[in-house]
Length: 222
Image (cartoon, rainbow, N blue to C red; front, side, top):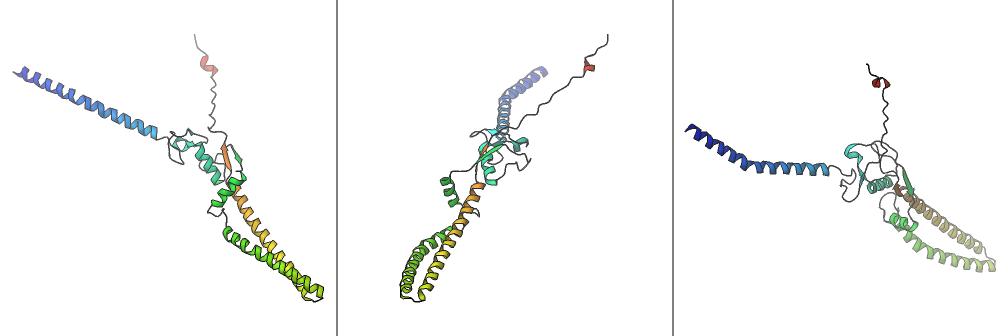
């Protein structure tokens, strides 16, 4: 009777183990899949935080771990915007090549910039240029005609109109030169700070270690 009960208990235990084995295996497989996903997803760019599905991750500096992986395009864009050639963490100097953008492209991008390196007050200067240019031309023309007429008649007003005409032309030219020079320097500063950066060395050089064997280790005793 006791042997019959023990055999029944053993059979029930075997059935329970058989039923629970697939569940345990499936849970372990799910854990392994999740750990694989986490390990695969841990490699990401330290700037855009994206993986290497769209672009290869490189290690161009001395930073290790996840901080050492980065997209080449993200690094080139960051170096161009920050106007530097060094890593902000390990301070390694990158081997890069800088080129100025084409004139027309750089002017369009500078025009759309809305920070302190963009065009400052250029809209107002253009409005003043459009309004003052015809007024200055008309005033100069009228002053020149009046000065010529008064000079032929021998009146002193002709000299005064000539001086006034000269002052108008000089003032307008000085304002135009200063305004153009100001915006030209602003554009040149923007071009200097927003160059096209090309990363030359994309992977840090591997350390070469040379092991020297000890000649004493090769000796043996008889």
